[in-house]
Length: 205
Image 1 (tube, helix red, strand yellow):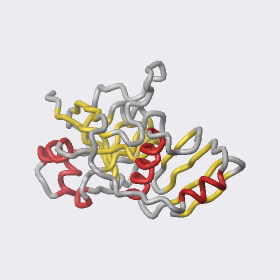
Image 2 (cartoon, rainbow, N blue to C red):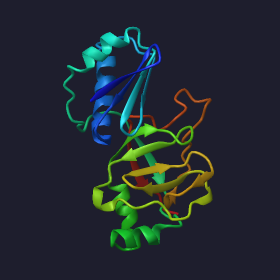
Image 3 (cartoon, helix red, strand yellow):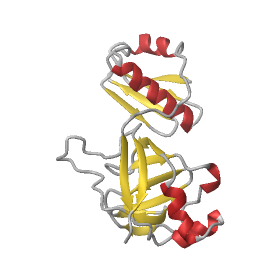
Image 4 (cartoon, one colour):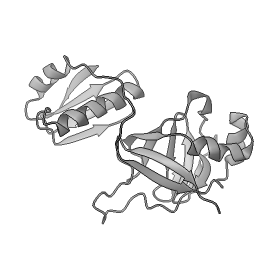
């Protein structure tokens, strides 16, 4: 763990990999819920960093963080968001070939996996979800699409995600959902927030 000062009242914590970052973010959330974390306005995780903004005493917190023991991320009883998916994406055949399985196996493998939102970005409401075993990681498309439809379920590298709105994109499309992933008028605008557990379930066409 490497802690850097950012501006007057922020800290950027660098971790070795995405798993360590998720574990550190979970520990921050746990300590915050237990009132064991000094006041911090915002906690913003990314792939290998966590930004702590609005820290009252950054030097004191940086010194405290150096002594933290952060346990590995474990399965918990946190809320799970369930997303119905029709596995009819344009790249199902290509993903099946990359995985070395029949096309119908793509839905079974993806829906049998428990995912967790590692961090958000790219577009409001877009979450980067981890959980697929390493052997199922697939490359981005060589040529991105100019427009990926709203609700598309996609894969790239170690992540799966769902497009909250139409946008350009280079991930492999395996399905789509009618779930509303981003709604600013909702109490929790983003359905996928860092730390949320997610399960995809097969919805027949």
